[in-house]
Image 1 (tube, rainbow, N blue to C red):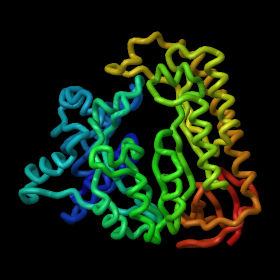
Image 2: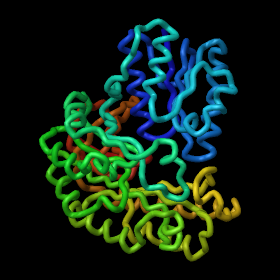
Image 3: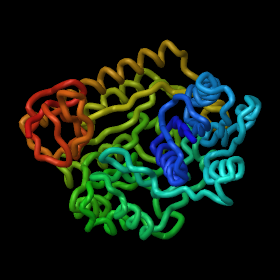
Amino acid sequence: MKAVVFTLGCKVNEVESASIMNALCQLGWEVSPELGCADVYILNTCAVTREAEKKSRQLVARVRKFNPDAPIYVCGCASEKNGGQFADKGVKFVCGARDKQRVLDAIAEDFGCGAHIVAGLPKQVRTRAFVKIGDGCNNFCSYCIIPYLRGRVTSRSVRDIVEEIALTQSEEVVLTAINISAYGKDTGSSLTELMSALKDTDKRIRLGSLECGIIDEGFLQSCKELKDFAPQFHLSLQSGSDEVLRRMNRHYTRAEYLEKCALIYKYFPDAAITTDIIAGFCGETDKDFSDSLSIIKEAGFARVHAFAYSPREGTKAYSLQDIPAPIKDKRLHALIAEGDRAEKEFIASRIGKTREVIFEDFDGRYTDGYTPEYIKVYVEGRHSGRASVTLTSAFRDGALGTV
């Protein structure tokens, strides 16, 4: 039996899909994350934007081109938001984002695989493992539908997370959740406590997207005490304008955000701070946009993920007046261009320095891998494991290096 488990959206979705894949592998099934001919399709959907939801709906038609008779099981945020949009397409089973174990229960019943298939540890891919530490979000940013689909913050126990990390075979572990900064809010724990509990692990620990409020002396000290911490901080910004941040319900100011960046650089002078910025949020003026553009250089970002605002039904911002698409596009292109400049400048500042690289893929000539700051490095020849690599020049989407 062959199954395709195809995923749209965030790293949390990828981790949950990997758990489903692992459970099916334990049954002896052949499982693939890529679209192709299969006997069964599990589609893990996304609803973070209208375009993501549209792509989720279109997936059903795409898989039917490979096998029109195969049963299709749909889960994820798009089906949590509106399961009917998939049920109307004649899929076999639909559930939401909050209990994907139900997908395995339905497969067990339909294929006689036993009373219950239990999702196991995610199947590890290459040298990096993603470990889900929690779910849900309590922030309710005015533009975001996800808290309504994923629910409130729920956290795994520190002990369970530490044990899972100890079992992974990967060189690097990425801690992920819908909002990892809120880890432990529901249990009396904290992300700082979790980091302290990981101080003896030999694996490189990398963090997923962080919120401004988590950055303080205690948290950064707990990161610094790890044996192998990747000082790449994806610190979510969304706008450099105080007025826009207020309308977004982001709970910090431009000045406070920059103070957090300065604190990170105090503890990790070579840190890479990356971020997200939304172009054209409701009511964004030329001055507001100028503030977003200028903060890229002021914060010293290593990379910027810029995207245009997309209204989502069910959010507070949906009732606000949207900005014309041509203005959004112009601002988005300006953000992307400035983000590209910042990334090139960041890489250039690391040329001549030596970093420990964890190797991943070989393309026939170069092996690529990542530094702790998440610079992609290419080294000629086939390599594996870890090595100290000196970055010699900018190359492709990263840097060329020598072992």
